[in-house]
Length: 242
Length: 301
Ligand SMILES: Nc1ncnc2c1ncn2[C@@H]1O[C@H](COP(=O)(O)OP(=O)(O)OP(=O)(O)O)[C@@H](O)[C@H]1O
Ligand SMILES: [Mg+2]
Image (cartoon, rainbow over all chains, first blue to last red; front, side):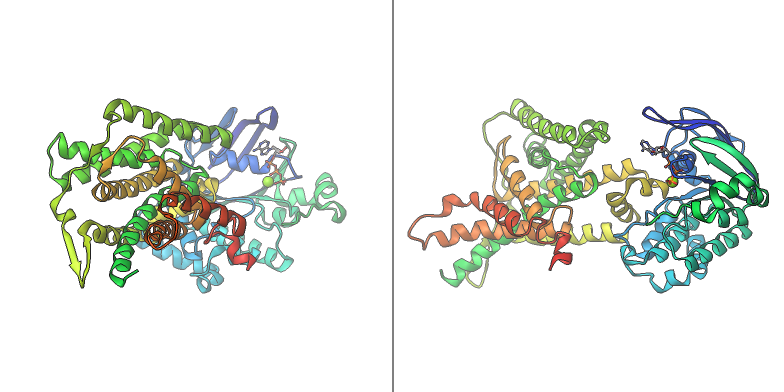
């Protein structure tokens, strides 16, 4: 469904992605893990056209999308729930959700999806008219995911959805990711929470300073000695504060 | 001051305040979305009055068609200004785009001198706007009454666009986070053009009404109202539309009342009318730097 080949990205002089290859099969959950600054967000932002590639290709459904505008990528069914949520704090919960459906014109379908999303996140229905900036961190993350779903994505990419959330909410978020995936939406997940990310992944990649150093089935990587040492050992799990 | 005179001045204040409010909104909206003070906004306002003037005097069009043309041309001009002078610098340091705005302002003023001439022109008088109307002893030209009414109508439409339409929602989203807005599939450039279009439309609506009320046109006529309305926007809390309206009205009332009461003062204060805006600016910057409707007003109190 999505195939990244030899992707290079530079920020000025910084070589952030050094020729990565990555494959996401339809219907699967694929996780991308790695330390801070490895280039995970850059990968997702490049797929969405927010960062321009310097070399390589991003093939989505047999078409190279790497030179398309972000809005045309969204229209093709890709969506990114960005790192740090990036909800619109000055808009109501409902408006945030409706903006998720900005490129769509099928009014009735949008209404139906609005109901579906608020079923998935009942808190959003309850807070429909609340100004989004006043939601709690966990609620904002739900809103960010719900907003992405409103675009009716075929492939949803999430950048650290568990960032800064309490363990119980984290569990909740991962349950929801599973549910989204079971509804037929392909998932590309970037996470610091490597254990949870590998547990739900069909396939996973480990990124280190702009290079893919390891890949394999989620369960394989969970049992891989290097991964255990670098990402799963209690002492080295990197938790980032909000 | 007798009640009738006071009422008369009140009408004048309401119409001047309305004109200031219309112009101030343009500053505040552009600032809200680009964090840019559009120094050329007053000159866009000036152009709108000349557009209407030439449509009526050179092309001999009826006033309503002339005004419509003036508004449309001004909208076009405002969006072209953004494209030419501001968009290429969107990712440059803030100071570059500010210098570009100042340059655009000078350029428009001087081109106006070249093309329109430096000699003042008289805005044609339109009978239905210059009628004197009398309500229980208070007499006033009809335009002074029409200005606040039109302004209120325009403000309602603006409120509807911003709060109820998809484009308005996109504008509010873009004003907070360009990148997140892009991720929604919003075309940020279109939204910014639209914002300039609305700002210019309001300036033009204000401009033609200004021409009817103060019928003397000169190429530099946008300078002082532009500066004052920028101040009005700052006083109200720049980036906040309600604030710009409030700031505009405070300015309009303040100026008219200074002139009104100066008759009863030992010294004639009316010459200080133009200073009012600047005194107000200094006062607000000392007392409440974020403006009346500024963000920290909620948090600080
Ligand atoms: N806009 C930018 N300008 C310059 N350098 C950048 C920019 N964005 C990212 N980088 C650099 O690119 C590298 C990869 O950053 P990226 O945000 O992709 O990492 P990440 O894997 O998402 O890290 P984290 O887990 O901390 O979110 C880092 O060295 C970062 O400093
Ligand atoms: Mg990141």
